[in-house]
Length: 98
Image (cartoon, rainbow, N blue to C red; front, side):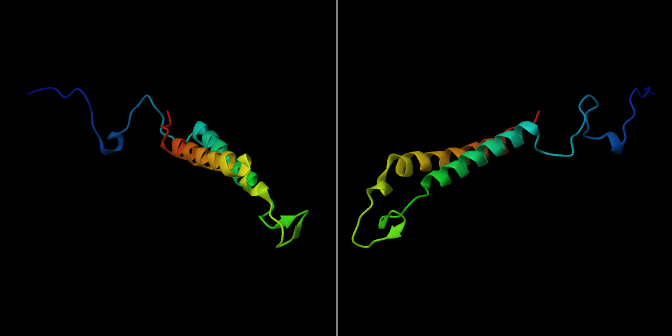
Protein backbone atom coordinates (compact mmCIF):
# COMPACT_ATOMS: atom_id res chain seq x y z
CA UNK A 1 0.00 0.00 0.00
CA UNK A 2 1.36 3.44 -0.97
CA UNK A 3 1.71 6.10 1.66
CA UNK A 4 -0.11 9.41 1.05
CA UNK A 5 2.23 12.38 1.24
CA UNK A 6 -0.12 15.36 0.73
CA UNK A 7 -3.58 16.17 1.95
CA UNK A 8 -6.05 17.66 -0.47
CA UNK A 9 -9.28 19.37 0.38
CA UNK A 10 -11.91 21.42 -1.41
CA UNK A 11 -10.89 24.50 0.59
CA UNK A 12 -7.40 24.61 -0.89
CA UNK A 13 -8.40 23.74 -4.47
CA UNK A 14 -7.29 26.39 -7.01
CA UNK A 15 -5.51 28.67 -4.56
CA UNK A 16 -1.84 29.45 -4.30
CA UNK A 17 -0.15 29.71 -0.97
CA UNK A 18 2.47 32.33 -1.85
CA UNK A 19 0.15 35.03 -3.31
CA UNK A 20 -2.65 36.56 -1.26
CA UNK A 21 -5.89 37.08 -3.17
CA UNK A 22 -7.12 40.64 -3.52
CA UNK A 23 -10.86 41.29 -3.25
CA UNK A 24 -10.63 43.84 -6.11
CA UNK A 25 -9.87 43.11 -9.74
CA UNK A 26 -8.21 46.49 -10.37
CA UNK A 27 -5.14 47.66 -8.53
CA UNK A 28 -3.85 51.15 -7.77
CA UNK A 29 -2.06 51.41 -11.08
CA UNK A 30 -5.25 50.54 -12.99
CA UNK A 31 -7.14 53.31 -11.25
CA UNK A 32 -4.30 55.75 -11.89
CA UNK A 33 -4.49 55.02 -15.64
CA UNK A 34 -8.28 55.32 -15.53
CA UNK A 35 -8.07 58.79 -13.99
CA UNK A 36 -5.46 59.84 -16.57
CA UNK A 37 -7.77 58.66 -19.37
CA UNK A 38 -10.74 60.44 -17.80
CA UNK A 39 -8.70 63.64 -17.52
CA UNK A 40 -7.65 63.46 -21.18
CA UNK A 41 -11.25 62.91 -22.29
CA UNK A 42 -12.58 65.80 -20.21
CA UNK A 43 -9.77 68.08 -21.41
CA UNK A 44 -10.60 67.20 -25.03
CA UNK A 45 -14.28 68.02 -24.57
CA UNK A 46 -13.43 71.29 -22.81
CA UNK A 47 -11.14 72.30 -25.69
CA UNK A 48 -13.97 71.68 -28.16
CA UNK A 49 -16.19 74.21 -26.44
CA UNK A 50 -16.52 77.77 -27.67
CA UNK A 51 -18.69 80.14 -29.61
CA UNK A 52 -20.69 78.76 -32.52
CA UNK A 53 -20.45 79.91 -36.14
CA UNK A 54 -22.88 82.86 -35.81
CA UNK A 55 -21.76 84.25 -32.46
CA UNK A 56 -19.75 87.48 -32.30
CA UNK A 57 -18.75 88.95 -28.92
CA UNK A 58 -21.14 86.60 -27.12
CA UNK A 59 -24.22 87.60 -29.14
CA UNK A 60 -25.98 85.75 -31.92
CA UNK A 61 -25.70 87.54 -35.26
CA UNK A 62 -27.08 85.70 -38.31
CA UNK A 63 -25.26 88.09 -40.68
CA UNK A 64 -21.75 87.27 -39.44
CA UNK A 65 -19.53 84.23 -39.68
CA UNK A 66 -17.07 83.15 -37.01
CA UNK A 67 -14.05 81.38 -38.56
CA UNK A 68 -12.90 80.28 -35.09
CA UNK A 69 -14.94 77.09 -35.35
CA UNK A 70 -12.31 75.72 -37.77
CA UNK A 71 -9.33 76.34 -35.50
CA UNK A 72 -6.62 73.74 -34.93
CA UNK A 73 -7.69 73.41 -31.30
CA UNK A 74 -11.29 72.43 -32.13
CA UNK A 75 -10.75 70.34 -35.26
CA UNK A 76 -7.52 68.46 -34.54
CA UNK A 77 -6.28 68.74 -30.95
CA UNK A 78 -9.52 68.23 -29.00
CA UNK A 79 -10.74 65.11 -30.88
CA UNK A 80 -7.24 63.62 -30.64
CA UNK A 81 -7.28 64.09 -26.85
CA UNK A 82 -10.74 62.50 -26.58
CA UNK A 83 -9.69 59.43 -28.60
CA UNK A 84 -6.41 59.20 -26.65
CA UNK A 85 -8.40 59.34 -23.40
CA UNK A 86 -10.61 56.47 -24.52
CA UNK A 87 -7.55 54.46 -25.58
CA UNK A 88 -5.97 55.00 -22.15
CA UNK A 89 -9.24 53.83 -20.56
CA UNK A 90 -9.14 50.60 -22.59
CA UNK A 91 -5.50 50.09 -21.57
CA UNK A 92 -6.38 50.66 -17.91
CA UNK A 93 -9.16 48.09 -18.04
CA UNK A 94 -7.11 45.44 -19.87
CA UNK A 95 -3.90 45.93 -17.87
CA UNK A 96 -3.21 42.94 -15.67
CA UNK A 97 -2.98 43.59 -11.96
CA UNK A 98 0.18 42.03 -10.58
